[in-house]
Image (tube, rainbow, N blue to C red; front, side):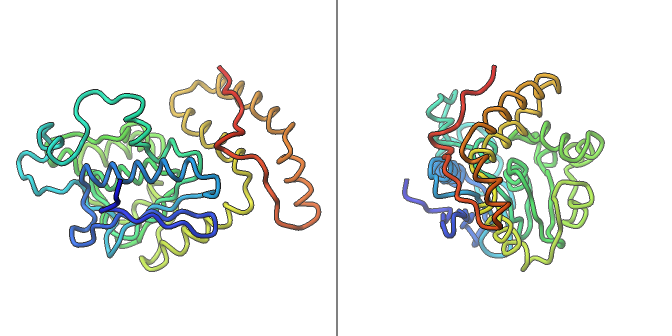
Length: 278
């Protein structure tokens, strides 16, 4: 796919994905969604990528669905006309449309400006979020006659608590980046100019110092924990901890710490993940 709406840049083992429709404040279209999913897929499969940062071009992160089709914006026909795949998605379609939580690397949302509707639910699918303190955020779906999507009913409730999720999702009200951090929606609120550099610095530290396969396993456990009973999750942790402890990266991690040097990880998420416990 020729990219028209995003930019993918890989440097120092960190992939930066930039939503790139600044003239429309990065408003979401089916094309943008397809290109973003393909970029996530590429980052997932490339072992040279250890972490991913998602941000927006210009002064906004993403202001939600592009409303250029007016009253038909959320209709199935309008979605098809704008490039959304019709009907039920196949496994291959899902792979093509990979979402942030499925990427086997940490995905950090650098919310550099306003994030509304789909823009905010895209960020919620990331593992971590940094936000501009003066950004305007809103899960505005109910104010447009639809409902929040991208699993936000589960994710927001787990991240911010049921009462806060009910407040934000059922009202669709606008709140600031500062309040987002206070509610736990974002990990930290910063001046807008500091959001992307801070996210990138964090990603580069993680890319060097965290074992890629250990990170991939831990990330999957975190997301599975959304709907897994604690005893079952603990059982899986035990099996996977024992597996990681037998691998070369466990030896390397200890020796690098004792010798005060950078670790040289050898296991690759694309090829070396263990069989997942039932």
